Length: 227
Image (tube, rainbow, N blue to C red; front, side, top):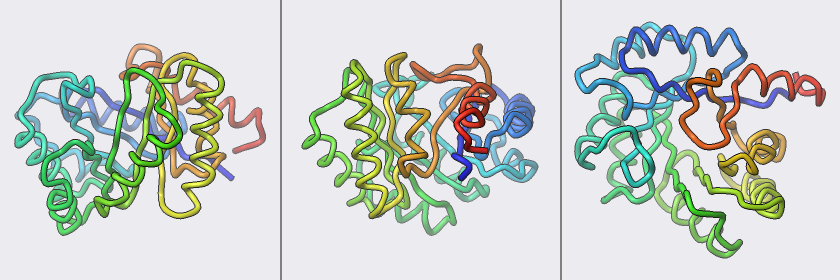
């Protein structure tokens, strides 16, 4: 088993993003998450989809989910649809998005697999609340659900991993905890059934609390016997 890793790419330009994606692939990444909220608004993302062979994930976070710039929801949705039409393999949509099912349908028709994500930057909710959030994501009709919380204790990691093991048997899931205390769930989530986990390209390009470089994550997996 080789755990899959997506590397977050916070580039300002398409040329910078392309360089970072190639580096991520050399370091062991399986997918590259292009953070559209970091890209300059006039950058031709269709060019990036044409020249890159690694599977690409388009993500455009709102300011409430710590996106890099303040934008209107309509702008984010149209940018994500443009990414799907350009050939991105996955498109990540926030669960709070209005008319979510309709947006998911448009993305699917454009040819992309869809991820519906819920982030919690304050803590890790109760098990019941986590399951409700998961059902909300699944109810959108997306290909994958993504639950990312903030870990405050070892128990939070254990609860997230237990949910991952249980829920991934029924449908595709990405689930782990942010923060220094959540690193273990980041590492172990694919081993417990998550489709993939997230890493940074290096120490200087971290976009979420607790992200670690992909090269370090690959070394840890190798030491665990997962190559």
